[in-house]
Structure formats: structure tokens, C-alpha cells
Length: 461
Ligand code: ARG
Image 1 (cartoon, rainbow, N blue to C red):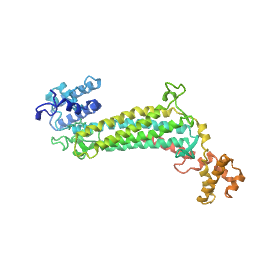
Image 2: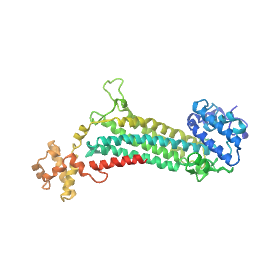
Image 3: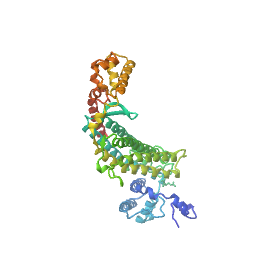
Image 4: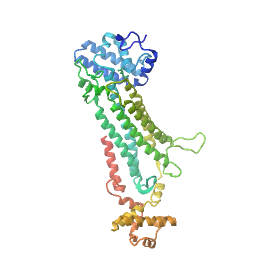
């Protein structure tokens, strides 16, 4: 018969069906190292509170050290009957040091405060890993922005040619979004750095254990203010999932452009062989699978967030077993990002840009029309009139299938008396770019400032 943690009150063990439903070792085992660290800290506060003598403390710490080693080597794994990681490790400790020592560890703690604490520890570690991987993508983008500082390209709105911009300016736009995701993780960590250990099942500890001591032992900045909140809240999980989903969505926007830019029609980039795939039937194919998987996995991360929030919605305080459903979505989010981001940053870092093609397309689609209008404004013409005049230039060019810079001085004068030959100074991509020199603009000098600012931000984080 199955042995459970609550044997005293029960005449028989749980049914097979309940045991199967209840079980979480197949996904929560990854918390094992954190569980053991928590147990070590807990043993120390039991000792400080006079509830564990010196000899028992040292036997327990030795047992936990051996258990940690066996978990690491795989010599100790969850058994069929272990319900969760916490139960399994308690069994492991008792097997190593006996019930008289091992059976003392559970005093003053519950799996409710345990799991809330370990989960924070696990996520804080992985938030660091994910942040580092996001910064790799940012660094790849900043480096390319630096290398290609002289490449203009068609800036788009509605996917239509809008105004020329520097390729670097465009790449940095993606970098800033990803930097904000990293900042979100840093900010999240500040809130998550509070330990629920000592909250017990929900009401706190009566045994004189010091939650602040456990907290600092485990690398937290302090203990939670409220034991109910400590055991029942999972907003730290949801917030992590949001930042994970947001990061994936930001990555997916860059991925989508990589996919488009690699098409024959765009021909803006070529993917490195190491980061593209072929076709089993079409010998000529080179496919952007990394970018497509990035785009696809963003959906999966949004699903993880939606699933988790749905689990949390309307849950009464304090702990409810529903909360066991909090782990798989965020583990999936972590695993997915840790798998995706190294491939994604590798793909970005090895892209070849076809600057000549981008530059040639930059002024097409009448993307300098706004420059004509703004030049007229600088000559004192009201913008409404200027917009009309520039529009008339576009219409004339479209009818005659020529470009704006093909209009002769006579053509210009015929369209409007305001259009003197001086307008030609803005009818070039270089002139257009240089004129957008306010902070945040695409003028080469401003983009150089931006590269410096982005580099400084990366250093800061
Ligand atoms: N495995 C559970 C979880 O992940 C923790 C155990 C709490 N169970 C309980 N019956 N109080 O949420």
C-alpha cells in the first residue's frame, strides 16, 4: 500500500486513479536542486530556533549533500509512488539519514510555502539565462547596425514604401524593443526577490523560525510581508510568462521581416547556410526555418500565458491544488525561449545584407514626396498647399512612369511656382536622411548616437 504524507488521519491509501492524477514528478523534478537548497536553509533555522540540535543538524546537512549529489548523478530519481518533487526528496533524505533525523525537517514548513519559494528561485535563475540570450540578439543587431551604417533602405508603413531610413535605424528599432524586454525581466526580478518560506500552509510559522534568515540564505532580498499572499500568489509566474511571450512576439516581428527580406522579390538578405534549411524535393530551396519557428513559437508562448492566467482567474485564497497547474506553462515558456534564442541570435548575426539592392529601392515608390512637402514648408508654404503640390508631383511621375528626380525644372515650375530648382537638394536619399536629424531620427549622426546609447544600455544591464 502507498505511503502518503498524511497517513495519520486516513484508514487507507489513495486510489491508483487519484495517485496518477495527483502526480507531478514528471514535470516538477527540475525544482529538485532548489528544494534541497531550501531544505538546507530550513534545517539551519530549525537549529537556530533550538528545534534541531547540533548533531542532528550536521547529520541532516550531510544527508542533504549526499542527496543533492545523487540527484545530480541520477542515482536518486522519483519513484512510482512519489507524488511530487518535495515528497520524493523527503523520502530520499529519510532513506539516507533515517526517520529520527530526516523526519524532523518538515516541522514548520508546508509544501505550499516550499513550492512557492522554489518556483521563484528557479524562475529567477532562468530569467537571467533568458535575459542573457536576449542580449545576444540585441548585440548581433547593434553590431550589424554599426557595420552597415551607410546603407539606406525603404522605410515602410502598411508595408508600403514610406520614407527612406538607414538599415541601421531599422535594426536598432528591433534592438530597443528587445532591450525593454530585458529591462522588464530585471524589474520583475526585484519584485520576485521575496521569499515565501516560513509562510507555512498559509498562516505563518509558530515555531520561532526566522523567515528573513531563510530568505537571505536562499539569495532573496527579503521575506514576503503576508503568508497568505506568499503561498497563494502566482502573479510572479504570470508576469514572467508575459515577458516571455512579449519577448517572443518582439522576436517574431523581426523573424517575419527576415522571412520577407529573404524572398526573391525583396532580395535584401541571404541567410547563412548554417541557419537555413533545404528542401527534400526542390534542390534549389533555401528556407528560413529558424525565423519561421520563431514566428510559430511566439504563438505557443502566448498560449502559455493565456493558459496560466485562466488557471489563476477567480481562485480563492489561499493555496488550491489548481496551482499545481502553474508549472508546465512557464516551464514550456522557459524551455522554448532557451531553445529558440541561441538559434535566432546565430541567424541574425550571420545574415548577409545586400546594401546595394536596399539603397536602390530606398527612393522608389516616391518615398521622397514628404521631403518635397517639407522643403516647401521651409520656404514658407503652408503645409496643406505643400502636401497638394508634392502630391501633384507624384501624380505627374506616376502618369509618365518616371521618378521624382526625373522632373525637369520646367516640369516643376509648371506644377507650382513654389517649386524652384532648389528643391533638388532633398530629392536624394542622402539629403532626405540627413535632414531627419532631431533626436530619434534616421540621420546618420543621430543613428551613430543611438548605437552608442544602445551599447551603453547593454553594458548597464
Ligand atoms: N505539488 C504541489 C504544487 O505544485 C505542491 C503541494 C501542495 N499540495 C497540497 N496538497 N497542499 O502546487
